Length: 283
Ligand code: ADP
Ligand code: MG
Image 1 (cartoon, helix red, strand yellow):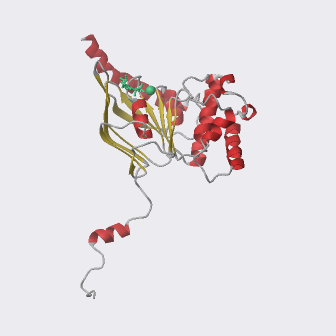
Image 2 (cartoon, protein in one colour; image 1 turned 30 degrees about the horizontal axis):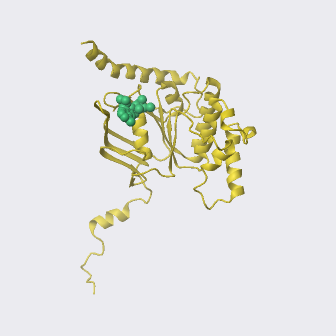
Image 3 (tube, protein in one colour; image 1 turned 45 degrees about the vertical axis):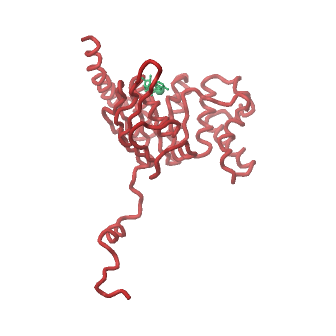
């Protein structure tokens, strides 16, 4: 029998019960991550103690010069590679392998040449076993429509321009409706017109579907156009240097003058972080 003096809840239990139910953990947490690559000739440290939290629904752009570890970090978040030190936690679980909720879109579209356009987009839905075939077709077509390629549903991949292939890849990444999108310079090879259109599309999709996005780019203006936050990296070894909150209203136009002040602030910071190394090289 429980005596009246016995407290039914410990102080910790009572405090936990009083906490709001909303999960306030970040969607993604990169904790003190380091990564080395060992080649036959030498060892390169690609990332040095990188820590970064990304909130649910946030669009974070990673910016930095070539070789600063952006792709390495994205691959670790995707679960395609393992960190040598530190942890990556997504939705409260340590990332140890790729998952359907963390899809990557690469610079090169990596489409399957033996499938037509529709087949490539439908392929991404293959894991959704509960989705009937007709529904898969409809979902795939709706994303092709979104990227303006509905008419090319039955075209072969090799018949498409580079820009069109990237749009197919975007449709393929979006179709399974992943909560987190990891994008590695996805628009770098596109012509300016296509890119501008996709900036608009991506912003409206992410807002409507509450996606969490980690977007890698070396284009500062692109980062300011898309990001809620821009995280600046410097190379040798890759480190987080500064972070910038971009609180401009959406949708943002890449050519809007309001972007210029943020872009020049970040470009100046990029130069600043590149300078000590340049001085070392001269010395
Ligand atoms: P970024 O995407 O910012 O251009 P990366 O993440 O591709 O940079 O590369 C970071 C550093 O790690 C570079 O010095 C690169 O040469 C090195 N690196 C990346 N991947 C490998 C690999 N598989 N083997 C050896 N070195 C690598
Ligand atoms: Mg890269």
